[in-house]
Length: 454
Image (cartoon, rainbow, N blue to C red; front, side, top):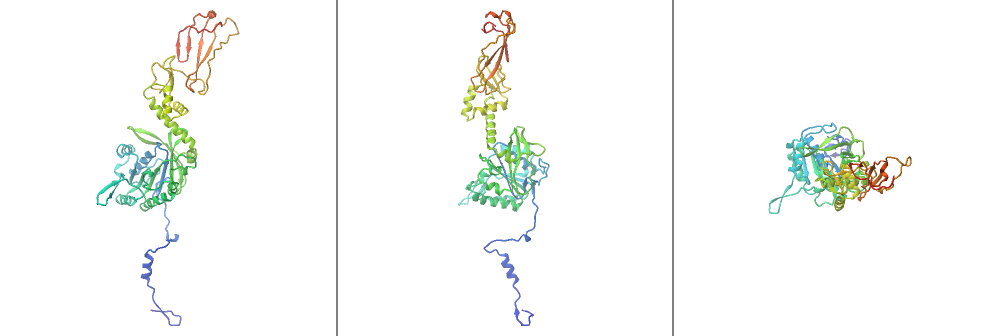
């Protein structure tokens, strides 16, 4: 009991501080509010400075076949052996966990890790989860983010040095969640994001692009929630000027300034693909490359046509008419096949002087083929010029030239062939022999064709 000291002599009890602290520590229903004065500022930790933050979700988007999975292997190998990144940035070394639904661990991922120089003792793959049945029997099932995040946390508790989790593609691990529902996707990703923050692990989720026009941020397949929940979004795209060059371009960077894009090519080592990085920063913007859907579709169609045509001509010359028929059956437009022909430097030739047209690769020309070089536009259809113009300078002129045009029956295969007839003053006789007839690509002795008196 204490006196109030106000002269009234009233007595007050000491506050029950124990009760107060107990009430404060025990959560009660209601809103949870924190004052920023009680929140200590923290620096963002980086797995790859300016590109991939630790403790956050990063999204990697791009069309199939451009090297997204190879890129994840390249990043994982550097983390496992404490190597610098392609731009010279250092990384936090540690272990990596892969969730891969498309690539085989034995014949694809492991060989790629080896050629990338990874310390494979620090790289793991989460292949499945074991769950008990009602009778207590354990069965394996595919991992999914909807129900198994607690099991993933158990993996992180066992492997304390994990710095990166790769989910490739994330669409394969959604369980029963509707990937087009923003609310469902956000609810699915929330535990994953919390897990990343709790253990300071970077999560790199791979996904494809949708076939629609618009800004790059909206091109990630399914719900925009994937990009919204990610603190960084990167895109892998084909260089518009070089089909063999790949661009790694920033789409979204919430936690750092724009570090610029990078470029790489895919090369083979012991028949296993790996990345070969180029020095310097790429100035192209993701919206400039990914925003033009028509250009992207054209590049994808041309790439498909090139692969098809290269395989189709692998065994030697093939008749053009057959190529037309087969390409149509493969769903390829003839215009795209012709552009693929130019990209591959396919040679057009005839099997003999009067035979049909054939295409063949540069290293697969038929021994009897006679290449004919085009000197006119592939879109022109010149007709045969049967006029023979008399040399009016002198009626006894000793030389005249006849120009003829030979037109293929294949659209766009117009070829100009110039035939020179050398005659002497006796050429007035239609049976007079001619010295030679020269056709571009071939030469043979023959009789002069009937052209009348010169």
